[in-house]
Structures are given as C-alpha cells and as structure tokens.
View 1 (cartoon, one colour):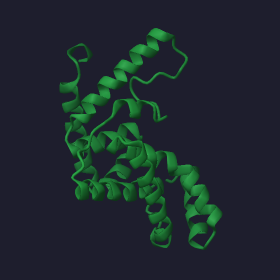
View 2: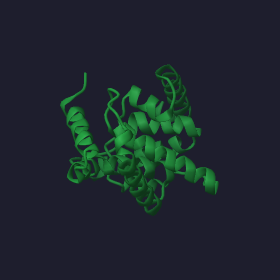
View 3: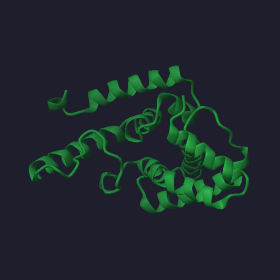
View 4: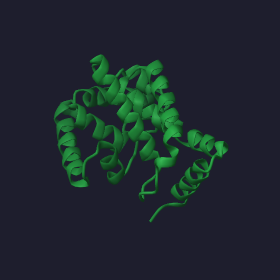
Length: 194
C-alpha cells in the first residue's frame, strides 16, 4: 500500500504531466538531495554530481509524460535516470569509480552506521568519523554491483523493490547480491569490528 507521501508525489507527477511546472518544481525540491547523494556516492566528485543531478531532472522533465505509477515511490524513477547517466559517464570516459571519503562525509547525507547526530561529545564524534571513514573505504572495495546495492539499500534507504527496479534485477537477485555484499563487507572490516 502506498504511503501518503508516495501518493502525494504521484499526484505531483500527474499535475506535472498536465503541464503544471510548479508541481515538477515540488518534485525537484523533494528528490534533488536524494539524487545528488546517490550520484556523489557513486562518483565521489561534487561538481560532476551536481552536473549529473541537473541532467537527471532535465531528462525527467522531458520524459514526465512517460512515467506511470508502479506501486513504488517516484524517487526510484529519478534514481534510475541518474543511474543510467552515471553508467553512461563511466562507459564513455572509462571513469574509475572511487569513493572520496572527505566529500562523502561532508555531503550532508542521511545518517548511516557510524554517523553521529551531533549530540555526542568530541570523543564520540571522532570515533563516529573514523568509523564512517573505515566503512566507506570498505564499501569502496566492493565490486560495482555490490557497492551499488549497499548504497541504494543502506545509505539511500531504498526498499528492496525500489533497489531491484533501479538495478534492473528481480528482488531475489538483489537479496542475493545484498547478502554477498554484506558478507564481503564483514570480511573487509577491521578485525576489531567483527
């Protein structure tokens, strides 16, 4: 069952399909940070992430009439567009995917394991920062598909079905990929964390 927020987003899509530019603006405001964080995690370059995020919404605007409700959050559609642009960029420039941990940790991303909420003292913040940096280094060592699965599921917080749609795989394949990625991360983590 769709949440109220998802329903509201699809109402905005419907309005945008009828030519309401303010509705598309609201969609942009709602999803721009999610798309930007996804691209930044994939490429590690702020300027490139900004460019690809802009291109994502430009393509979405051009294709808004072709999207239809499929029982998922419309954010998955934006992430799919961004993913395709990232893949095209990687193929065309033979770009090597890397995580730049300084840029990722400053990106204002959603909290994930090891990220402090700002209420802790200096020791806890230092420990959380070190934990985050180590975790990001381990994620960077995963294969492309495993890395993308971990980013989408745990850093972006997408559902299994949304991740499957974006990665163009069935849910069973994503579950297996996620399982292998988590096992690999467990092997890559420092011994003290196991």
